[in-house]
Length: 88
Picture 1 (cartoon, rainbow, N blue to C red):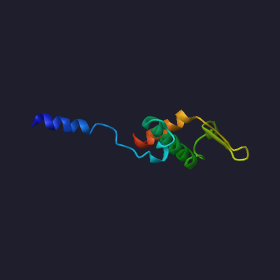
Picture 2 (picture 1 turned 45 degrees about the vertical axis):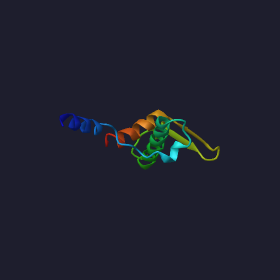
Picture 3 (picture 1 turned 45 degrees about the horizontal axis):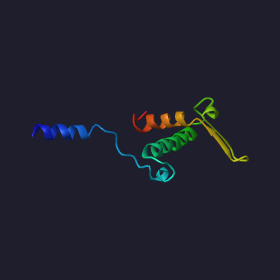
């Protein structure tokens, strides 16, 4: 009986499963699909708070005439991980 309770407690410790269906077909692995999802969500956060973030062009710069985007994907991923996982 005690062993069953311990197993149930262990199951609750993991991270919640996130929906990454939008990026899954473009990524070779689940991990990369989640990283892409975090990056896109990070861009969304950045666009919402662009006026509050100094030098936000360092993180993401879009040129619609040349159809190019330069971004710091790792930083954007981490920003959204902090928002989703840590509720910051």
